[in-house]
Image 1 (cartoon, rainbow, N blue to C red):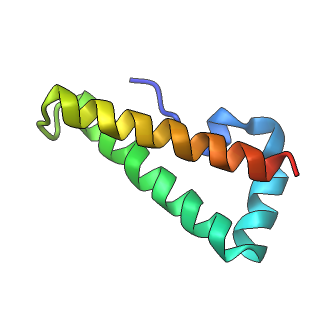
Image 2: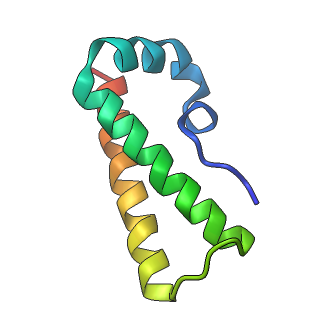
Length: 76
């Protein structure tokens, strides 16, 4: 199963991600929450956790929303 962590999603922004994580608390919280949700989805996809389709859909929608928010921070 493919990982969707931010360094794989935005490799061209590796340095900016690091800078924002250490300088912007809101970005760091968003970054941490993104990774929590991404890991949760990954565990479900790998069969380590069981979840119904609606819950998985909600998690994926949340992940996409957070990814858009992160992308907007990276392009300021």
